[in-house]
Length: 231
Image (cartoon, rainbow, N blue to C red; front, side, top):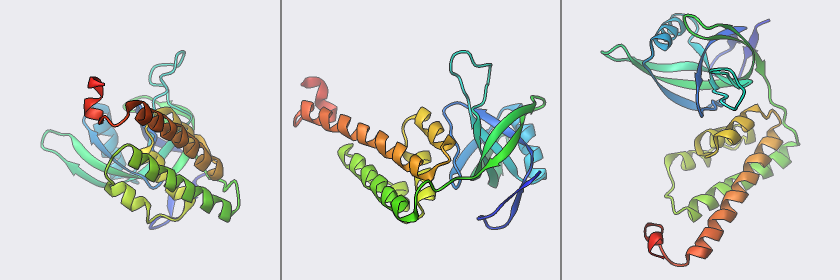
């Protein structure tokens, strides 16, 4: 059965089978914008089909843990729509993929001429009432700002953009995609359908990172990072 996706510019029907790119250290979230450079022959062929049909494709992380088969995908992928694509003179292409939804990877249909998987759309559950999720969203925002301050990193466009996002689920997904430094945690957050749990998981990781930064600064004293080797 096909799934109807709402909440975008129009209603989109998600097929049961879809072309997919399997990439290392990538977790593709709903609403995220993922730039891709297409150069491999199999992905060029895949892109041609995607553009000629519904412009939908999936991106799934490469599960390279011991004991996995070659190019084994994780069990949850992100499905997106090609919003823009520029063909280059050398046959490569640059595209921008916008995330639409999470999807369970239920099997690999074929590997030739490119990988195609069978999928099932996944829906999030709030996990808590709206007020609790709003508080968790605000706490996550506070922790992100604190880590940025302790890291002495100037505010970028993404941090400014996140301030405009009030919806807790959209906030945590965009923040995880853009600012989470752990590939393993990003995949776990992608697979977590409970929004409240997702917010708490990311906040917990940030608290650990903030504690490590504070400890480092305490041990480092007043010496700047570029002169730490002289301490």
